[in-house]
Length: 121
Image (tube, rainbow, N blue to C red; front, side, top):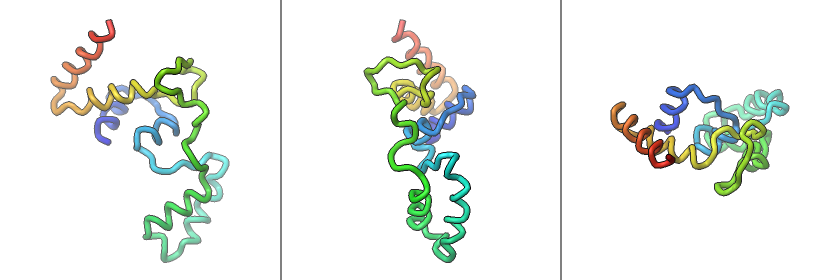
């Protein structure tokens, strides 16, 4: 949603597929190796190309079930080296981003960020 879009835009963070699925910014995942199959599958829908459920089914048929990079998404209590992880945005960071970047004004956003920083020492 908007808070995550603001977070991405203002910080310049580069998210990966797992992050986009987790935050809800993406609804489907098709690995790069399956992309050549995507356009023909969508073209084959014909008149059904305007039907959201038909398009979703076509994408799901080419994509992978479950979350991308699921084996790399750390749980809340798991310590992980983010450099080696396929997911960039850890769960707790996504929650902080949603809370801080949902502020109605820039002043409130900075106030929330300062509060968050002071609560972690």
